Image (tube, rainbow, N blue to C red; front, side, top):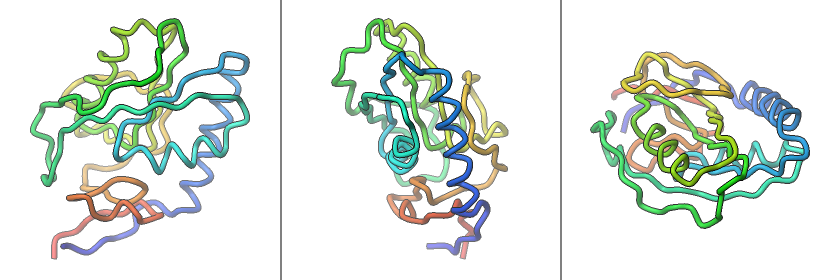
Length: 173
């Protein structure tokens, strides 16, 4: 395993998550949205975000496989676990840890769109636009980050480092 270097501190992340929650509160007041977390990475961000919201929400998850034990996406995504809640006619916000290539999240957005929600938006804690292979609309962005392999805040490398409270860059040994 390599070493990690802090890129964004826990304190800055907490402040930004609170700002994102206020924006969602304002836009979705009275709409009872469904937040759909993309597992596994989004669970940390989703938990932090939900605790800062003041509006009622329902939560569901999808699980998509794309990275495995690699540092680069193979460019394909497959559904491992689908939605449990009916979302037809509901306002849906997909919550993701990071939008990188766009392949995985495009797959998720297409999957949800086929279920005919009233509206569909994407909220990501981290956005890496330099890695984009597929364009996706990102409605709420915590931080744009550089083209480096990031871990922490739910992001992992081979199922490790998710526990880190700061966003860190994984450096080779």
